[in-house]
Amino acid sequence: MKESDIVKAARLISQSKRICAFTGAGISAESGIPPFRGEGGLWNKYDPVILEIGYFITHPAESWEAVRTIFYDFFHQVKPNPAHDVLARWEASGILSAVITQNIDSLHTQAGSKKVYEFHGNSDRLVCIDCHKNFKSNTISLETLPPLCPVCYGILKPDFVFFGEGIPPAAYQHSTHVASDCDLMMIIGTSGEVAPANHIPHIAKRSGALIIEINREPSQYTGTITDLYLEGKAGELLPLIDELINSNYYT
Ligand code: APR
Ligand code: ZN
Image (cartoon, rainbow, N blue to C red; front, top):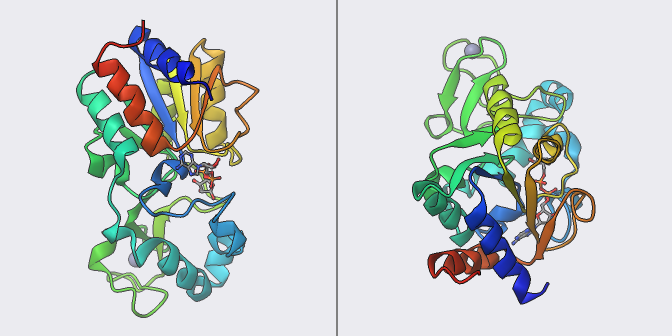
């Protein structure tokens, strides 16, 4: 990547009016959360079947064992990193209109972002597969698995989207609306391999938005719909762009 590409990114961001971000596991990598694919990815270690809804229903204890280790044993210890912080500051100062995220780790919200559309839900809640009531995950013991509903003793499932489940309708509607209405989309840390989430940047592109992408390695978008590709770590590149914007050094 040329240094001038960072300057170009700062200039494009400064010139745009409705910017949104579309984020994936890579933006949380520098907070210590492993991504799913690529180097150190979870799917090198676990079988993705554990996150299939059909498997969960038939093997809740096995699925939960892995889910607890991956998503619940240490999520409460992780903190937002400089990439989350920059996006939150950009929203506060009016540069960014919203974040659409595939992540379920709440780190955008913890960093202070307000308009966050969680395409795959969130790990903060558990939902009963029988009576559909939901509960804050930190109020439910995960010592014995699967955890059971305090109301009807049905099996509790993390209230995030498993493979084979639908996207939460409100998140879907907001995300498609924001994508079709933006003039610049920042794609950050996603491989673009999982549908239907991976359609979101295509909606922005079709509506005429510019696409800036930050990733450690080329994704499905690089060389296809990405207009400006910045290769590197989100937690390093976003603060650099932010500095340029703050110092007006991009002309
Ligand atoms: N900075 C920027 N990009 C990074 C960094 C980093 N520090 N570290 C890793 N990446 C990139 C990787 O190169 C990869 O392209 O982040 C991307 C992570 O891709 P995935 O692991 O496939 O994550 P994501 O795209 O969010 O996955 C989508 O898959 O399993 C499902 O539901 C799960 O929401 C998830 C969906
Ligand atoms: Zn119940």
